[in-house]
Amino acid sequence: MTPSNTSTEAAANVPAESRPSNFIRDIILDDLKTNKYQGRVQTRFPPEPNGYLHIGHAKAICLDFGLADEFHGHTNLRFDDTNPSKEETEYVDSIMEDVKWLGFHWDGLYYASDYFDQLYEWAVKLIKDGKAYVDDLSADQIREHRGTLTQPGKDSPYRNRSVEENLGLFERMKAGEFQDGTRVLRAKIDMASPNLNMRDPVMYRILHASHHRTGDKWCIYPMYDYAHGQSDSLEKVTHSMCTLEFQDHRPLYNWFIEQLGIFPSQQIEFDRLNLTYTMLSKRRLLQLVQEGNVSGWNDPRMPTISGIRRRGYTPEAIRNFVSSIGVSKTEGSIELAMLEHFVREDLNKRAPRVMAVLRPLKVVIDNYQENVVEEMDAVNNPEDENAGTRKVPFSRVLYIDQDDFRENPPKQYFRLSPGREVRLRYGYFVTCASVVKDANGEVVEVHCTYDPASRGGNSPDGRKVKSTIHWVSAAHALDAEVRIYESLFLKEDPNQTEDGKDLTANLNPNSLEVISHAKLEPSLASAAVGNRYQFERLGYFCVDIDSTPGKPVFNRTVALKDTWAKVEKKHGDGKG
Ligand code: ATP
Ligand code: MG
Image 1 (cartoon, helix red, strand yellow):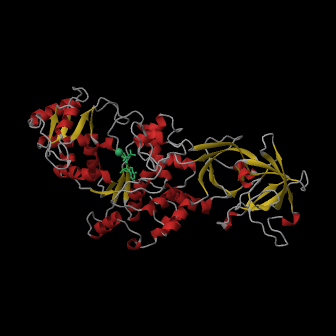
Image 2 (tube, rainbow, N blue to C red; image 1 turned 120 degrees about the vertical axis):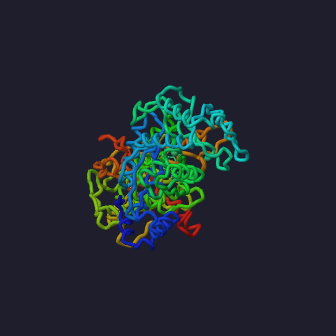
Image 3 (cartoon, rainbow, N blue to C red; image 1 turned 135 degrees about the vertical axis):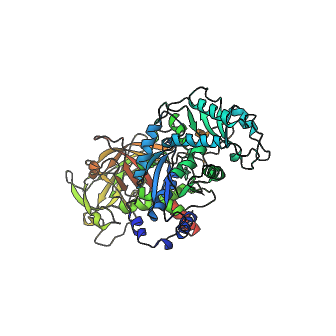
């Protein structure tokens, strides 16, 4: 269960009490002190396999696995598969892959459906104890009877059926004698409870549907609220962490556990992660996939674990982000810039530097010999002295980025322009002598002269230049597709829609820009899918799964500009 990053390994040597704490960790520490569970810490991560995991789930995963790990406990992966549906196997597989990729390993692998027999037996027990009954009201009628926050509910006319009648009807529900929706099994609690969850909640519904694991064995399925607490109890989960919206369900879970006299798991609620400009709801993300607004669950613009993995994020960056946002009892929203800050910070340490030109502009060095190629020494990573150096070919015709040249430079612009001298990184000082324009007056070629004494990037006479720009040798450059991403949504809160419009109205039309003919330094010929690089001065990029041997495709993970660092400076601290 140990994530393989150094920060976690280092943390393992720090005495537990002195680590930065949070209220959940404090509860666990307290329970260990009082020996509430005989020193056991057992958690679980309980995804419903109805979609791919997203960055919000990463927060839950880091808590569930991370806390158990810290206290030498255990964590189960349990699929809450109480709702049969066709596509679940794909989701189950992706969830397992994502948890592993984040760096965690589960102890037990379970499915709520493993417990269907036990849950059925317990339902029968509750009927026998007069605590559950079969109701013939329709779903609409049940809703009408439920009452409101200010008004108590009304008892169903079927509420006082005899135990024998209830047992017989429940048995026949199970045997498939009734149509979907004609009857349900309800807990008999209190139709006047101020907590709506306690107003005789439905425990079982009739659903003639095949289940991905139990096939056609069942035509009644337990509701999530009836299955969840008992599943925790069966696995002897000590600390059952979930998001705040389940707080009002806790009394119901405890009620079932008390009636059944089974192991009492302790539920602890925390704030769900919300990120600006980001949609974190599997249902809504599914809509984007189905309507073709994105290329799939793993589109690099998606906030899914598989999307951000493809985009180039590292598990370490995600874990560091989650650990820095902490947990609390009130919901808020975290800046997307903060997530980006953490991937920059991580990639800065590990990503090799290379030179790449996104929008090429041809540069000819008039006084450089034709057919000569020099191999220049380039540093692979200034942050990592073990990363070494590499050779980059330099020749008479180069490409630079269009952004690095202005025919008429504005005041603060110090890059290449007519008459201006700049440094070509790892190359020479060059001075712009003239330009060639096309019929539209666009500059298509820049002519320069170079100073042979400045090889490697410094002039022996101590002459200074104000800017250093990156380049690639035209004859040696690799052609590549580069995909530049912006946030998928334009609105800080994508759920905020105008009347009559749905969330797709908030989609950012510029969330994907494809650059078809970027030019890369030749060392990238050996780049494999998933490899991450810093393109000097541009950002972090990684090789996409769409790459083919003749045509590499790169995703921009994140630009270099650290807007978060600015925010941080302004507010004087590191937390959002
Ligand atoms: P969604 O609303 O995206 O469908 P969900 O809550 O239905 O999410 P589950 O598969 O039921 O998804 O969630 C598994 C676990 O992850 C639960 O314990 C849930 O509380 C937690 N979780 C889900 N979304 C978030 C989030 N945004 N932040 C933190 N934890 C989350
Ligand atoms: Mg759910």
